[in-house]
Length: 322
Image (cartoon, rainbow, N blue to C red):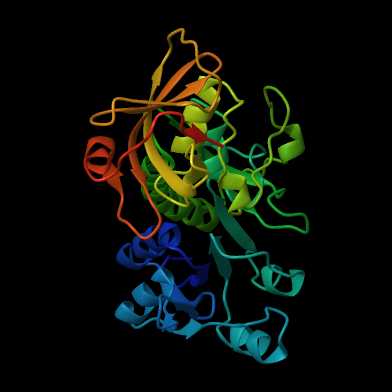
């Protein structure tokens, strides 16, 4: 079968999923329909906001479905009417069997890790938070248990010590677009070798990648210098690591931290102690060094470089991060 005749239904929601859809459309593949999340209210006016995938689908004139429930019979009838030969899922949601088992060639998913490592909702964040030097992308066929299906293809990507999650996200997004089209070609040509994840060699224990919530992002100043440094870049630029800045007079303000540097040097301070000249630098003590905060954000303010923030903020001695 030629790619122009292969009927593809694509499922995805965030920016990460747009690149793969774009590669399919621009590559001449026959995308007969797109499924994305329902519009969500956003901003002060709670105006309904389109997902990035919906925005792209509308620009391309692609048929679109936005089901509230994936087992709803009205949705299932509309999906069957598209007569998909193959379904592709990128950053969407967990599918019921009635959906993923519908096409004759199955449903495959693009996952932003080297499975079986980092099964779950936030694989890119956790790879950086854990200080990994390598991650990657995987395409695999869906089955009952989440992120456990037979692997089709993988591509490894190095993580530099200075990369934050935004940088790694963009690398994987671009490579993911190519891997999706390569996977479709392999399925068309019948050259796919299904590799069960339980047969794959893994170094060390399996690490999960659970969804990240606000409390997940709170910095623990009792960790090591490297652990806190990796934690910050694993959440930057979004959703951002945060901490509370406590002043001697008892006032406290939440601070988001986006960029830091490691200063591995001895000091006399207790973990969490703020060390600053009040003008150009702001550092926080850890047991094995100082974390130099390079950019941060106060509530209701924009993100600033540390020296910019200190021009308008007087920090008394004795401040602590908690």
